[in-house]
Image: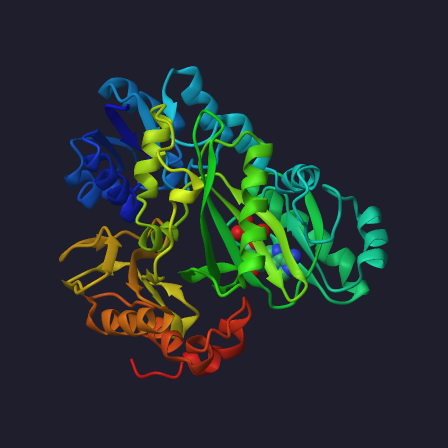
Length: 450
Ligand code: ADP
């Protein structure tokens, strides 16, 4: 069992991890940039160490400073949260070589799964269904040839991609060469690696993903699936659990996810992502870390996933068999971003001059905000997550609408009304959702008074 954990992150996820540590009696060490000295995670942790200047490169991505902070404070483990160093195999290796437990899978698994083209090949070996496409990275010539066999439209994707970036849609054959070079260049500058692969573009699919837990001793279970189809520019905005897949597809997908995890000797929490159309489901990638949207799974299973991560990293055997996991009701999460939807969703940092958090049955607000908090301009615009649970989807939607209308975060522009517009859209209410939802309804979703 771990005694002292350093949290190599900030914002709501750092606070979330501190809470899970507390529930296990684990001592916590926060790290922070100079812009985050007044942050909630710094105030809540038992210890706090400044690790550098505001830009993430100088602080939250500064491996040496984070490792030094762990060594100097006697933390035996590092929880990386999501983003920043959470899927950085070099960092996981560095932890291993310094005798620090990395709360996540081992460096080798992170490396393999971080190369999305390679990961797909591995999944093919495991018998997991894939989106038709190239076997690994492709040259321009090979790509052109492939177009003929899989047919248009296709998606050119960066092997090292993430966060919905580094993708190019090709609808006409003549666009291919230009899009190929553009995708490579974007991949090089965003991820430092210009390898790209090709997938058939599945038109307006659903995004459904399976939460996995695996301990050090080969036990793997799933905690069901989440529907994350409400996206803007391939980035998730609203997530819910369960999805509306029928039981046979759900079971097949969860089994495929467990098979995928076993095939790579996976350890800790992970997510196997699929896209779904009428014909079936297809693996797109595995995320080797805690996901932003993990609370919806927690709400319907009653399992604290971050707590499980800490137990697994400490060498504890999974307490639950698959048959112990039960699913109850419906949960929905919306991501509250400090951004201005009416002006191209531009980030809107600033001071929160008043905060009122909704309460009531089955309402959860994960954030690091407080009144008079200055949201710094250096990091992601997500400042909180509002999550509700209901007996069924209908009740969850009504609860979320009520909670959204009660939440007050004044002083900065937020996407709160935009989220409410989605929650009230008849297609959303009917469960008629896919990854094209926001784009298709954008005009109506922006028709509100500010
Ligand atoms: P990232 O790692 O950047 O998040 P993913 O491969 O997970 O990239 O894909 C992100 C989103 O992009 C998916 O949820 C889906 O909406 C869309 N997408 C990815 N691959 C395809 C595809 N082959 N066809 C249609 N949409 C896709």
